[in-house]
Amino acid sequence: MREDFAANLVSGLLEARTGQQLTRDRHWRIETALAGLMREQGIENADQLARRLLQPGQEALAEAVVEALLNNETYFFRDRPLFDQLSQKILPALAARRGDTRRLAIWSAGCSTGQEALSLAMIFAEQRMRWAGWTIEIVATDVSRSAIASARKGAYSQFQVQRGLGVQQMLTCFEEAREGWRVDPALHRAVRFEVHNVLDPAPRPGRFDLVLCRNVLLYFDSTTRGRALDRIGDALADDGFLMLGGGESPAAHSNRFVTCRANTNFFQHAPSRAATAPGKDSIPIRPSLSANSLKSNLSTFR
Amino acid sequence: MKTCLIVDDSRVIRKVSRHMVEAIGLAVEEAANGQEALDACAQAMPDVILLDWNMPVMSGIEFITRLRASPGGEAPKVVFCTTENDAAHIREAVQAGANEYVMKPFDHETLQIKLQLVGAA
Ligand SMILES: C[S@@+](CC[C@H](N)C(=O)[O-])C[C@H]1O[C@@H](n2cnc3c(N)ncnc32)[C@H](O)[C@@H]1O
Image 1 (cartoon, rainbow over the protein chains, first blue to last red):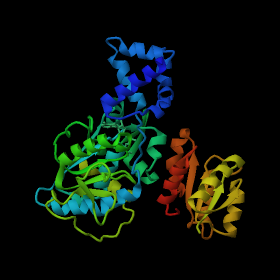
Image 2 (image 1 turned 90 degrees about the vertical axis):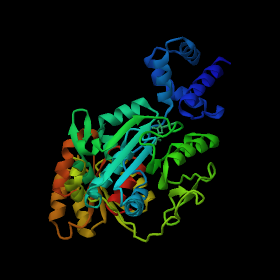
Image 3 (image 1 turned 120 degrees about the horizontal axis):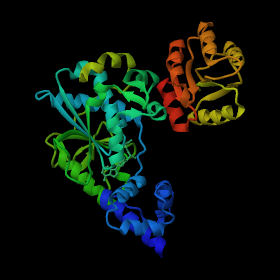
Image 4 (image 1 turned 180 degrees about the vertical axis):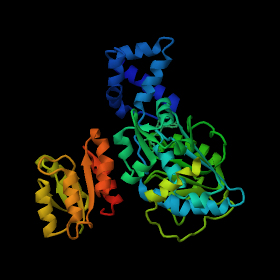
């Protein structure tokens, strides 16, 4: 009975702060996920945890509980073929559409510790010639304070830095430091990291040409996915692109988006809203990031 | 089918690696030390070599230096494996002619990405 109460309290906290549901059949996860925190805090069982959480002034504990339940799994260029599509088809399409203003705003929603947004920054650095004279604004947000704090540090463990990156890319874009591998300051400066809930109105500048929301929606129930997609839809430029994680689709949760014809992992506003139909482009996709060009191009952001 | 030579003095690690590499779709040969590996390469150059950097008989760097100097030895892509404490070796290995590296212990996904990066998967 008590255990149940604690589980409900904890999953209620999680849902209130992040929109994520821990359904009853997954309550068992709570104990595993919170074991470390409870040990650290000298809390012996779920009952004690619930009592502590109900006392006034336990904000820090409540936050730590929520943080411990979030899955921050991420790595550089996750689903590399998608990043190849992004760099070779989507970005050129955006370049053509924004040729007049030469500005792009990109939002990585649910960025975890920053690898996704930094992968974007690396692509722009590698394509420096194409983007010369452009203003590229990359905003990366996550509901997790600790993930954003870590992203702002820009230091990655050896395990993190080798995940998804080629060795040349790693040696070019990172420097070994006492606290781990430190990302090149110019790349780091290219991204603005903020604490933000994707269920709230979008962060500044409020309108984005490209939104990445990858491996985040899967933690929500269908209604909440629809709400998140509404927020993203409100913030996405009429002719902008949405990039979800490999295998993710908005179809069952929102009718605001359609698959781009030529690029099935990218989405655009459904036709009633979009000013123009998605363009067909036939540039072949091939692996794009060469470390040598990257090295000379890091100065894009300097 | 592409071929992968797994070079590691630990039989357990060779077995685990073989399992992953085969699941990724490559044919696997094994060598327990650098000399065995050079002999195997002289017989038939593999497409990719998964190389333990800290082997007792012949070090990773000695192996790769001798491999690259041998006829046809520039062809195989070499992915070397190190532990967390080997960060300093990474530059050294790349300079010696390694193409990619993976940190031990690695999982299927991490290894697959590295093999994709060298064009072997
Ligand atoms: C599995 S990670 C995915 C990270 C990255 N996008 C990727 O694909 O590699 C999911 C992230 O979503 C964040 N998240 C969960 N609920 C969120 C919400 N309501 N608003 C913003 N971020 C959220 C988590 O904190 C976590 O860092």
